[in-house]
Length: 312
Image (cartoon, rainbow, N blue to C red):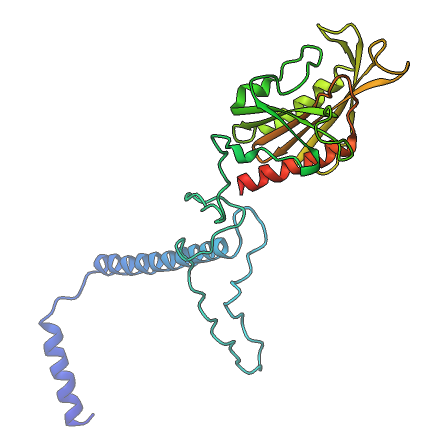
């Protein structure tokens, strides 16, 4: 053995003799602690691994066992192996609509009431009837016999009262006699009219004509208090006058000795509505004469023209 090696052993022996060796019991306790530490570390690692698997399972499969949801539409899925990586262009963000910028719905009512459509306001009914509202007979029909006065606007129809009378604003009437063109001036008139004009409250004039139609239908015949004859009533086709019109006739046998047997006395009544105004021509004859339809039609047109000129 060389001198250097001998010196090294001698130094090691000197150091070892100065330290007490660890007893066997201490060595076993130290070894047991290291073993327990290794077991605890392994157990912790296994627990973390199992927990991670469980959490991962809950994220991948819902608790109800249904199939996992697909990824969002804008989330690209995994690329196949070897395929080039291509990415779709970024979607353009859509601006969020706010209630103030959203267009109003056509079917859903909003909190603010819609503005009414602009247009001409409906004309209000007149409140008074001037003289110019009454028509003037054509020159060949004038007799010069005319008077103003109170009186009924319509003949009696089985005692029926029209409820629309309660909606009257004003009524004016007159009596006037007429002659046919071929009748010489100064001769006995051929007939006469009870002519009235009535203003109704807005929307009630059409009720007056409707009720008049019903009254005529409900009174096919009657006897008047001052006449022992039986009068028959029926509606006739009126034609186009104003906004609407009603025409009916009244017939009764001529009084004994007044004309040939079987001859009838005929009265014609026409009511015409123009807006909220109703004008009535009630042909009353003259000494039991019969009304001529052509004359009543002509005078009805003149009466309507006078009303329309007044209301314009």
